[in-house]
Length: 179
Image (cartoon, rainbow, N blue to C red; front, side):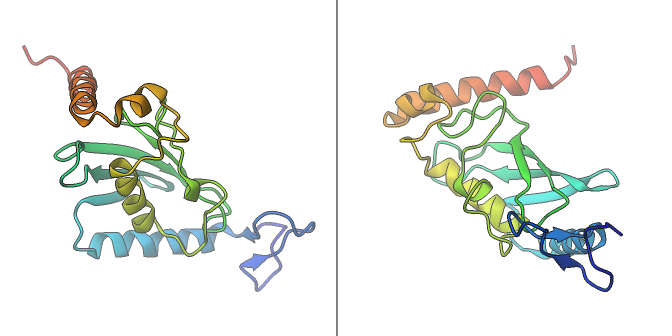
């Protein structure tokens, strides 16, 4: 048990009362196991996530592009890394699949308020993935990480052409040559 957690307690305030409370790893593990079970039982198959191997603190997620958007029929993989202070601190989320989007940079980093200052311990992985799926459809072009994508966004025909070209190229590079 962590020295920062009082015995018989799973959560305690840190000594400076700044930042999130400390949470022991057993409590975080139980929370993540519960979220995994809820995700597996959820009928919405447009988003999913599972631990990467035996590490409950690192997950691989999949989101389908939202219907009736330029992202429809595209599938994106993301990595989720949960901090020891989860759910009081948000997970680190990155796109693994290259994603051409105003709020996603070339390294897969995401600009989304709930991954920074607007995170709430009431959020869970399912809600986070739905929020990311919504972000695909409704980017914040006034605060872009990818200025090219933000500039193209108003012209959906040109945007989709660029999106599909980059998506197809990235997926061809990820697959071994079968010839």
